[in-house]
Figure 1 (cartoon, rainbow, N blue to C red):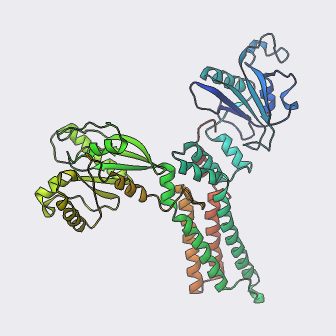
Figure 2 (figure 1 turned 90 degrees about the vertical axis):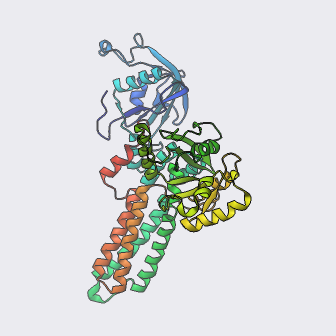
Figure 3 (figure 1 turned 180 degrees about the vertical axis):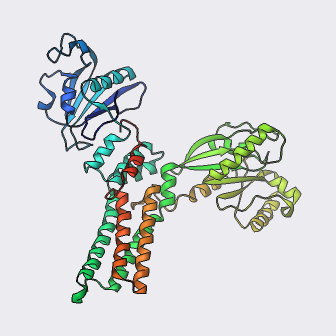
Length: 481
């Protein structure tokens, strides 16, 4: 089956996940969508598909493409055709469709064999297989979506939490696109006034003063900073976070994992070095998707298997969004805070003091305070045996990535690394423009900075985006979307 072709080709693909299911959908889009679909459907109401009302489901038999030996006969070859399935067919006339083109969908039974045969028949009568993300790419190219909305389609599909879904839906509705477009329009308006002043410089006409420019650019920069401040939380909500449990052997890392997920996922023994490989489990706290990773205890060892586990533990810590470094309260008390081997200070690390149930209550508070003073950071006392401190630990973890109440938050949230980079690029250009204003720089250079800022924002919504960027974005989609 061919997959390469021109944008004007009519494309088809299975639009639902592979496997068994109640319903499976094959989507066709392009200028010949109805002609191709008409060769494969027999409407129970008779008549041709394009004569029926658009956006209406019709009961139909879906038949296979003709055999090659019947190619010279009149179409349809009713004596030779074979019914693949009974299903529903809907015709959506462009531009009132997802892609902006004529679209036909077959709603079949969700058998992988049925879907494969229908898709093969579509190709046999003139369609080609869609490339990854090609339906959404056509929606963007045909003006149905801006680029930020197209990316929100993928975010909606991959949403791991209610918060992630809410943000993706806001961007799909165009909240981010409108916000960015308003900022870009303001920049272009300022640019036009600056360039008009350049064109009429001989006539001593001022279309905008430097004071007006400064105020306007400072306001735009402030608005960009406001949404940039949401980037860390937005990424955490979109992708989830990885929290690694690290520390010496036998401090209770595996017990902590089991306690946090409420399951005996990791083996717990008194034998040091029990955990040799990474153990991962996903949880959902306060709408935030979190992957907890238990790791091998950090120590010097001659065991080659344990050495590999420790190597993987260090790699996991380097890649983590947050590390819970677990230490044994009893061991710290025995050795003394001044002699205990603590980890290096790391902003991505929380110190968890486990086994506090063994200590006398009068001992815990001064020990925690001494540790906090020694390490210059907060100490989180817990007991995996009694559960004490676990709720506070969960709250501390989520508060590192969730600021404020996102459930009630209605503003624009940045979740995409590409969007963040573009906004930072725009900010840099605006700062350069402000510096030029303060230093009395030439208007021509100021106009260049304003153009750069507007172009950076245009990259978010696709006004100015290279083919390479588009290819990278849509290649992340599945074929049916």
